[in-house]
Structures are given as C-alpha cells and as structure tokens.
Image 1 (tube, rainbow, N blue to C red):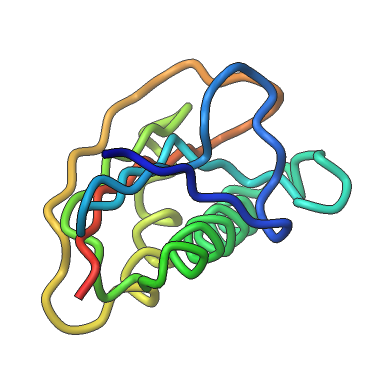
Image 2 (tube, one colour):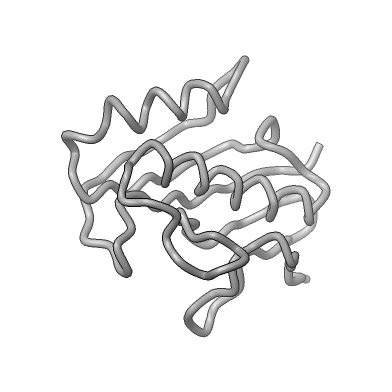
Length: 125
C-alpha cells in the first residue's frame, strides 16, 4: 500500500501530485527543484545554488520518510542546459559519498525558472 510523504520543510507542489510516496521499503520522490520551501520561489538563477536547494528539498522528503541520501538508488536529472553539467556535477559529487546511485541526465525545458530538477528512488535501510 502506498503512503504519502509530507513535510513542512518541502515546498508545496504546484500541481496535483505528491512530493513523495512510500510503498513498503521503497521511496519514490517527484521531481524536486530549487524552490525555497518558505517562499515557494526559485532560490536563485545560479545553477549551483539551485542544485544545492534541490538537494535540500530531496533530503527533507527522504528524512520525512525515515531515509537519507545514503538510501538513494537512482537519480533522474533534468538540466535546462547541458553546458551546466560540470557545475551540477560538482554539487552532486559532494552530496553522494561512497557508492553512488545510478543516474540518467537529460536536457529538458523546465517550469518557473528552474535550471535543474531531480527525481529519486530510494529504499529505506
């Protein structure tokens, strides 16, 4: 049975979807972006700052599910500009130590000034 993951540390979704769901030990997050949970606005037009906030949001959802970045198995990364990949990757490498999750990175048009969006699948340990 699936259950909603919610936290006041996560931006309210702007559409009809959940920030995250658990199904047994599995944790599925909707795409997270660089939105400030207090203002609902994108934190900056800087890719590194947006990536940092995106990970803050991911960590908040995972924490609400009793997990952490160490439990992430897969990341799907959307970048508006693939030329930003090195700046994104620099932040990403700091977030995942040890065994890295599998990852796919694609170019995408994103909403509301987002430069990056990340979807993760994790399994609670």
